Image 1: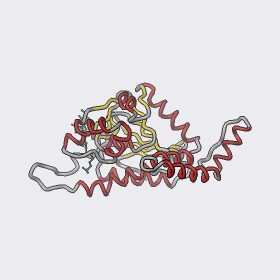
Image 2: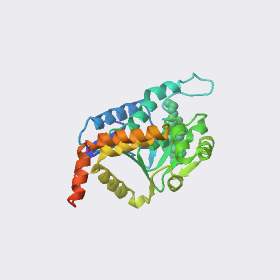
Image 3: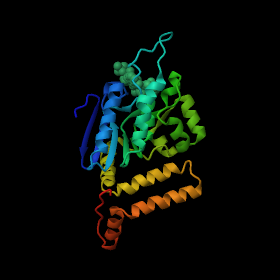
Image 4: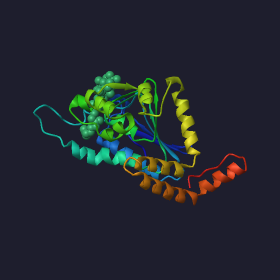
Length: 263
Ligand code: T3D
């Protein structure tokens, strides 16, 4: 399907979704949300997709909600932002968090508002050193959404989460990596190659096991130790019946590279 606000292609085992409204720093309007939903569904239905890439076109990654998309003025009619979250942002975060394959966010430039937090919804976040993360919500009287109040305290701790939410300071990619907010900050000149290398690695990996690891790690936030040990047992049992486990062990014993299929 041809899209107007995003690019999507499946190539080399990678579903590649690029937010593509560069003149608006790839901020979201309803049409772009609909296209992203469609592309994620296409990725889910495509057995050749072993990893999902989310990135942005142009100099920014995503500036969150398109603030020019609706009429908001002092004294004007009220807008139901809760409806916008229910319709668009909440389903998007949940879709990213439950993708059947690992998700990589390549943050190619500024990530602000919901754009910052959608990046954090992905499994592995790699950013160019010139990129930055801004919880811009406080500048317009809003609360960090798209999971911001969920990810930030878990990733960077309560003090930094509240500082970011209340002050809206720009966090550079290097700072974000140093704080544990993202996986890695990469020199701009090496960024494209580093992202491709990461994607190739994941596309050839035992992805069913990786997704199970994501599930267990996220469950640990609310599980007691015994429940977590039970979850690990259940996942291990399921994976032990899988093809990738047999292939991984056989490859080790035969001293050859494994050929994983994600099954
Ligand atoms: O539905 C709901 O509303 C609820 C959900 C809300 C979720 C949210 O995301 S709320 C937060 C919305 N986002 C923001 O508040 C961020 C707004 N943008 C900025 O603060 C700055 O643009 C940046 C810090 C991200 C980048 O600054 P800079 O100086 O690098 O670029 P710029 O010049 O501000 O922006 C470049 C262009 O993109 C500019 O257009 P122009 O002047 O060249 O025609 C600017 O207006 C446009 N742009 C940037 N962000 C947005 C945007 N246009 C519409 N909406 C945006 N969010």
